[in-house]
Image (tube, rainbow, N blue to C red):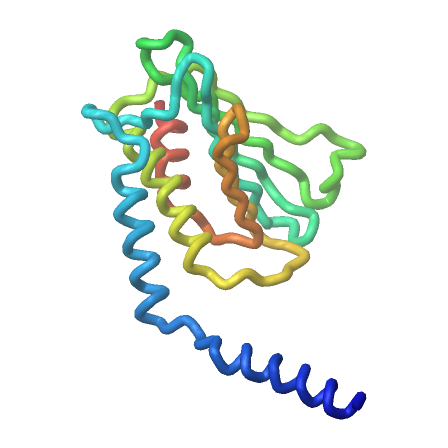
Length: 185
């Protein structure tokens, strides 16, 4: 009786597995294209700026570097926000530079470079949105791997309704381009 029951259970399990078919590359590409089309129109207003930003909502775009290996690296952060409901959109920029000889800052404080209340123009707002889209696309199309070091990229809204965390990640070119534009102001 036990052999019949065991054979029946194994048969049912094998039958269930046989019905499953792996997702094809075409199906994966179709999902990515759909996500890309949604992302293109995500968060844009008539003027093309990020619609999610308001006097009560802000976004943080952040990258933790990997220059010190498993101890991390420099941290670059952009906080995008409004002070008034219908007002201009601002950014605060912070770059925390750590010394790899003292990665936990036990002897020396890390060097911090800050710029506050930078008014963002339309081009910079579009670049911020493209940065978010680029990170989402990378996250959705890259196989996850386990690592003890690497770059960490993040997009987080103040109320935590939007959280994108990717680690280990990539260089995030659009974010770096946005950083350059802000640093040059």
